[in-house]
Length: 396
Length: 167
Image (cartoon, rainbow over the protein chains, first blue to last red):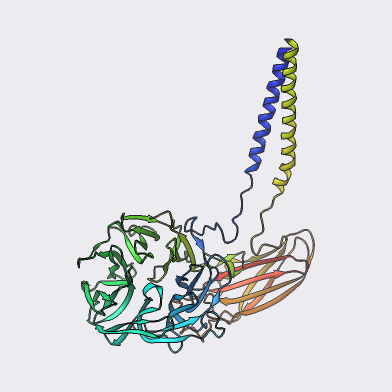
């Protein structure tokens, strides 16, 4: 009797376990599909999420002051859209040739470029235009001509612009949100300003200045917006150039410096240098690494971190990194899987609270035709598109 | 003593039998529906039985000229015949500042189940010239052509393919 009962017990337990195991195996048999617009891994790592779709040569992303919208340039005209959803809203006509767009306030964009006429040469100055949302005519108002560079103004209000006043002479001016000139600084700079950015306390501006001469010659200047005075911080060796706008951080002025390689077809090698406060001697930025090849940099809101697009070494893929300037630690935020990340000086932007960074990337170009089973407006990696990469909690 | 042991053994066996029955029912209930799950169709794959085929070699031979022959294979992979398959081809530039997209339309009257038919279009892929120089700085690369093909039927079947062609 006991042996029968024991056999029945063992049989029941075996059936119980077998039933449970069968159930587990079936639960894992169907892989889930990613939802549209969320969880899409486009080759930059799982945390990078697309902010735009479809064809178009996109660049110069800029978050709105509240961070809810992002504006960018596509094929020369300017659009914006809600972050994470929504249709694009066009700000200029399609024949506009914008190079940069910056929010001046929640419903206004400052646009650097040319609205009409022939396309300016690379060395020529541009104009700055003001566009407002809700104006159905897509009209823009020209705020200033002969503009060499622009940046959002102190406390995020208005604009600071560098104006060309001679073939190799520049002046700095402050514009209000309305576009009215707030102040023109009459102390000229002996050269053409190629990039500028404000200090974290909004009292000064760092300027890259190209001076006259047969060879490429660049200077780094610090401009005091209260007194209107400026001084040369560094004069680079002939042949070296400052790429993009120098970035004024809590630890000094950082800039990308490099020299075009003599042989054509090779990529120029650029380094990140820092001039610390109280010193006029530039040094390689601590924490980046001596083999690092930088392309573009952008200081975070508050000035404590530096977003860098570049390569860990000349043979490494381009990725987005964030350098914590206090701890000198470099964190990679993307995992590039055969993507082309745009390396233009305006092709990255911090969100207002510094919790994410927008970059522009596409899949590797092919000379062969590609066929996709989707409408063109939903294609992602076939064209340059914007991606938002979260920062918060990864690199403080 | 024996009676107590028998009662305990009986209670354990009854519990195990009941639990096993519930497990068996649970597996029977969920098993078939899990196997029958189909992933949501991706955009452009909503037609369950209508397929578009673009020949890679023919796409490679396309040039930035008018009158380029473009063949679309339309296939009815379903069990039911289809009629009045409307085909629309949109040719546009990768440079979205060019707003002059071209549209071509054809119709396949009958498409029996399991059959396929080639449909030919003659596309104008010549480069738009009016804004080409103006947009050179805004679009520094030669823009590719985008050929978007849509097929729809009155029965609700649809398919879409987009070709990105360097020309």
